[in-house]
Image (cartoon, rainbow, N blue to C red; front, side):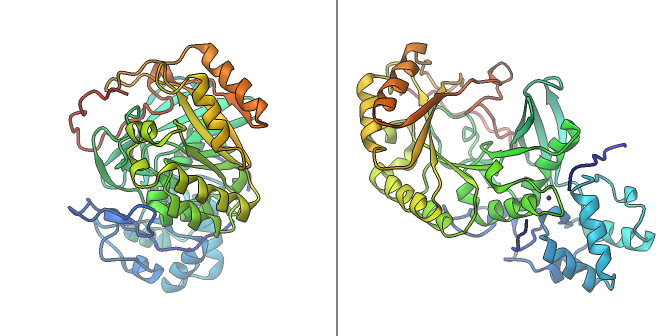
Length: 406
């Protein structure tokens, strides 16, 4: 099929399309805010703007919502059914070349190729073999490079995607922010990673986790637009409940997400039950301490009627004592929550060590007594540095930061 995958037929979203550009200095997005950040030049772009685009500043067609694609076709004078055909090629077929769209007139294909690019996320390098966890180095539309992970399992195909080039939150045990922050990814670059996974899997992913490089809620509008494109019933049709947003704890954005009416899963990186320790491990806690974060989580569960998963990386001698488990149980006592205990993944710049296996068992017992379900994650990607906290931003080859001591 030469780059195409026939996938089962994908719910719906509207936002601005984006043009891929090098970031402008000092133009980073505000945490939890709604702009596309340095990847968007000159403010939000309408579909009419997209139809007028050309040259090297090509618009990512995967950043268009279904409604925006309709508008583009109208602007080009194409009949409405052409938008249906284009959408089908983009998503159920995961098409990677305009020439493959054989049922489109040659003139329309040429005009689309002039105005849009299909190269929203291109796989440059793959580590691992089919049937096992694979790490993919991806080139974005402007040459930035990020990593994504493919995680196959019986009856499911999960892709872990990046949402930013770099990360501004600098968690001590995470490699993703060591080279600093480049820019936010556009919706099309996020969607493009899922399409790359579909081609490599040989079928559409069943689950998407926004747990790669970057803080998803720091790129709020683009991540929500990507979710709605991925969820569209005439496209990839990935169920909202099969998509997970992970956050380091941006309380205002969690409150905002509560009002979106989405059924996505929310995962909150907690990693410590006390402010002093959490601030050492996760500097974001100085801005949004535990009381504020957990209050936002309560608002989220009240509005959505959904559980929140709290991620807790066990670090030997740092946050793995029985007292830590008891304090965690106290903090989460009134929240509909589950806890995912994660073994520490080795990161060169972090001097911490994994907790012994009995620490996870101890946490599970203490939390169970408090009525909180806890599980221990089985890491599948450590050997390839593809596990939690090990993905790296490759964009500018900046030197890594000095080692952090917990």
